[in-house]
Length: 489
Image 1: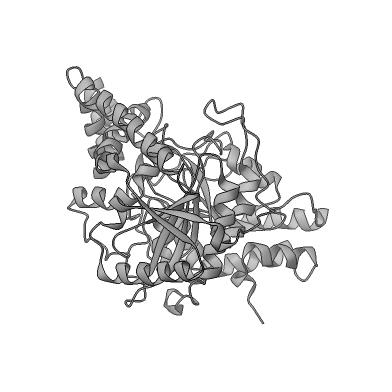
Image 2: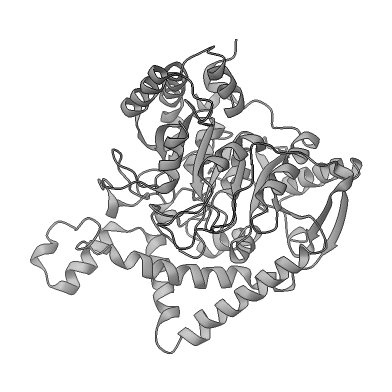
């Protein structure tokens, strides 16, 4: 008999509908799974056992509701989503103990759809990182190999999916922070079009890049989660008012009908041999199905890493200025007895980690007098060129297909003293965030080392339905990964 924690969202939803188990039983099974795996995986910053079981009990008393697509389904959310009754730290000491008095639109809509929030997952501090090693509280471990990173910044969300702690999770993607950990942990992750999902109530990193999105074990499960949260929100001026498609009624096209673009700048990168082998074999399976590949060029892609880190750091320095120990954030002990400048300096120095300080300093520099035009303005202009390349490429194909990471999950500490290498590893994912379009990360297979390898489908803005439908084809042609090794228990 299948354990309840092993069920995906669709299977769990059907079981709840047919009354084969209750919301309390499903929630309890997932909480026990968290208890069993968390000592080694360390995916969660706060486990909300009491409130989750109470929510599930209330749902059971009310009875199954077909109008609520996530009725009784347990989920985890990244610890950047604010809501009452749970701390929100964004992985930073400066927000330790912070209890929001309001609720993020994503969480509000999840609750309205009937979801049960199990836990808040770990992340790189203020979502700044690619490995979840830069959390101020603890690193998260990759369930496929506990000595490896899960990716980041939504590494806790991806690890919670891979370890079967939950059938669904929500993270945020600023420069690849959903797609990259999904790839390294062997699950499915969707970065929606910028503005498709409200950012209200999400701790900000870079406001023109941040986008919330789902992670799950299948493409259809991601569609189910997106359907619950997508749409306009009057509390977020960047949330689009465009109508939301039906992500629950996906119709996969025939493989022979698909024309897929291959950006040569990404496919000609220097890959780890295990990644190259998996991607080559997976691509051959697609070609055998009759899918058409079209090589194309995104000429300004070579500037994407520099462009992103100038713009994102500038926005981060502005957004994080509020955490000064007065308006927001904890103040260091003894700070009250010092001068104003010393007060700010002491509180921010002790409350923020090295990576956050690095990006604040970079952002402050590129926005400073004498450098704004040379760096920030120029980067904003290049961003438009990258976006134009992306849209032009999609005129000649249905989707773009690209790797997610040139290397598999790496050992802890491999790059912590080499931030430039970490930044360069993001070159596969950053261009999509600069362009603002949607991207779907999918497993491509397991490497010889037993680590997952992922690739991503990049689609036209606000065309998530077509992107997910194509993802169903990829999922059928390149089967899901085998059962996770049990050493994370």
